[in-house]
Image (cartoon, rainbow, N blue to C red; front, side):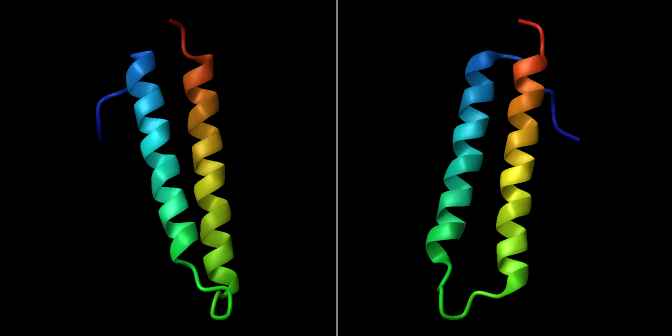
Amino acid sequence: MGKSISNKDQQVTYLKERLHIFLEVLDSIEPETTELEDIDRLIAMMDDLEEKMEQFKNRPE
């Protein structure tokens, strides 16, 4: 398992990277061929990102 990210700058960088990955996946999806599993995967990615944001927000400085 990776090291815990406690530095606020590292947290922001991590979130930006995850958001960038999400946007790349979203951009690569073809609307005509997208299946329900693809949409579920995007929703799961957003849920994970939101969960990580909450974890970072609730960590002490």
